[in-house]
Length: 252
Figure 1: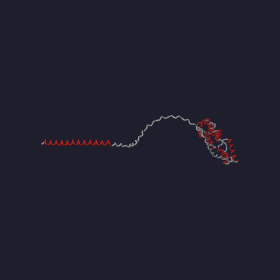
Figure 2 (figure 1 turned 135 degrees about the vertical axis):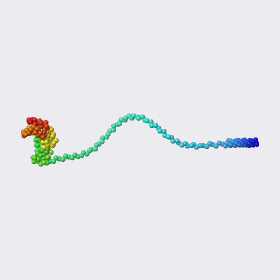
Figure 3 (figure 1 turned 45 degrees about the vertical axis):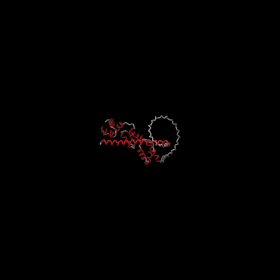
Figure 4 (figure 1 turned 90 degrees about the vertical axis):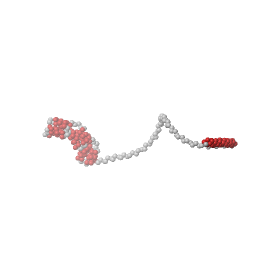
């Protein structure tokens, strides 16, 4: 049984193989005939001209800028150019208007009485030893009105420091003045303290001698002890040394 089936199987396979071989042979001849026909037609028809290909416009490619490195330039020494002096044109100055100077008021006319007061004041100054206030009082004592007396004193040429010095010297000649008391006396006469001090500092005087003169005047009065006289001289403005000198010179 098995052999039968094997025989059938081999027969079928053989038939199939036969059909395949026949098919290949028949297809190959047809293919060959078709190929020959195609070549015959191709020989008769001229070849179609090759189509012209439009050139493709190329898009421009943007080039990236290349950064250039800066090149350091060497400084070139410039030669100094001598400048030609430019002549300046003189500028005309505008005249400056001068302000009018106010004229000094004219001196008032001097009355006869005032003229006489001036003359009288000058005569007293020639005698010397008058302060400004003392001279005005003296003119008033002479009968001149106070305004005329003051006018006269203001309109004479006088150095009041010199007048104070003359007055101080006259008191020193009388004797018995300490420096302190002499300044007070000049102030009483109408001299400003500054003028009085100037006068006393600028006269030639021996204050020890003045203390001696004062001590002698007290001894003549009598009734003074040594210590009492010493204290009195100090009270008069003499220094301790000047007072001791005066007491010693009178024999106490």
